[in-house]
Image (cartoon, rainbow, N blue to C red; front, side):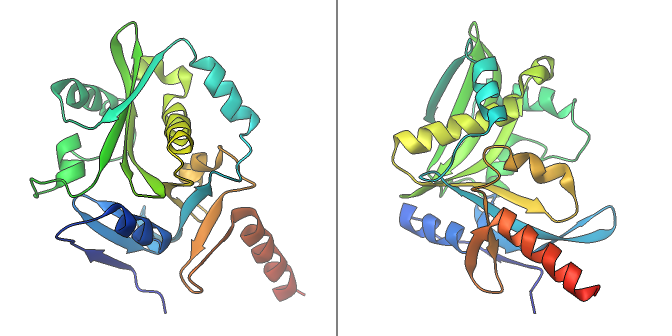
Length: 233
């Protein structure tokens, strides 16, 4: 039987340890690590699957290539994360344009009630003639990165900056020879989170806690469809 969730509060965390947690379907929440297999949305329980890309195998989709081209005029920079008023101001502006709940601040999202940061965290900054228009925060392991938070200026929504931030993180990981990228989870029968599959749906992998293995997302969908067909015969 699957438990709903677990939470672990480490006293310290190495890059190798983060790799191991991510590989086992655990993820950052504030200064803790947690895992869950279910989520409640609109008073309905949904199954969730943790998602990853093996960057040695991806073949970027046509949409991904289009988004790269769309944003080629912007300045992109990756650097160690430091919380700045400029980032908090952009995050506050971003929250005015979304229709779902988010953390009250970047600080609260990353720290909760813990002042120290146990994670090795970087930020992607996207600028238009010096103006900060998007930012993406991610954690680094020895062999992986984990996307934590993306946000952008509402006036630039047409540029698909959330997806562009994902692609920029992937570029960084490949350049740093970190083969695994973990963008969070997707939710079965709830397509709001399916945008994470745009990178390359054919190589996207999901974690099955029942077996402790990662399987291709498309193969798992096919297996479920075949099972449903057999059950109806």
